[in-house]
Image 1 (cartoon, one colour):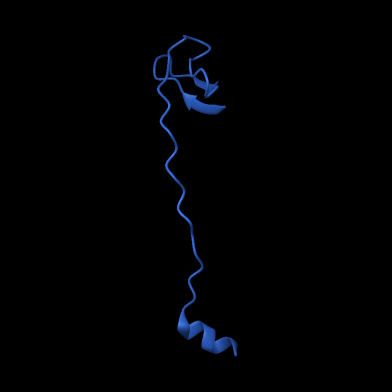
Image 2 (spheres, one colour):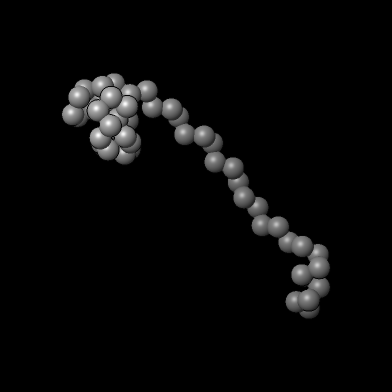
Length: 53
């Protein structure tokens, strides 16, 4: 389920991903796929590491 604002009746509604129609006005929404998440890697700066030893 996702919460979006209906483009037709402007209400905040919860939609099922399998049938994304507004429960109030029955407007059929086009849900965009979520962008792929990028991996975040830890960045170790050389200057800070020398202070720890």
